[in-house]
Image (cartoon, rainbow, N blue to C red; front, top):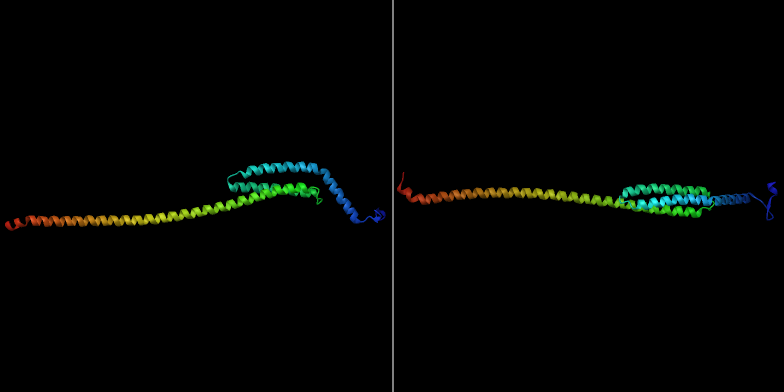
Length: 187
């Protein structure tokens, strides 16, 4: 019976059946498109709202984690639209919208990731600078303590020399003052 079917005077072949099947599938999807569109729009709106909230988070690690979760939701939504489309292209416009949202989330993830890396580099540089400063400070304090000891030693020597000089001077002065009397009172 199939062998006798014709289309515009030509025999109806498997390709005609495949094209008709594809047209039927596309038509079925087109009929479901408003429902799919509403469902997709609702999820897209929720993802967009969350995306705006997450984009305001100041802590980049937290932002990155939450954006990654949003990316998974966007991926799931895109996979759902693609699977419902069944290769017909009937949901191409919806898929493009979801893909655009997914790309925005991916871009924000890249930015957050880059900021995390740069902040870590800055913290490491600051840590190294702080460590270098502390090392220099300890070295300076050590040198200062050595200089303070040296100064204290010089002060002590000065006092000793001054005491010796004073003792010597006083002895000489006493000898000079007592010299005439020593001659008179020779014992």
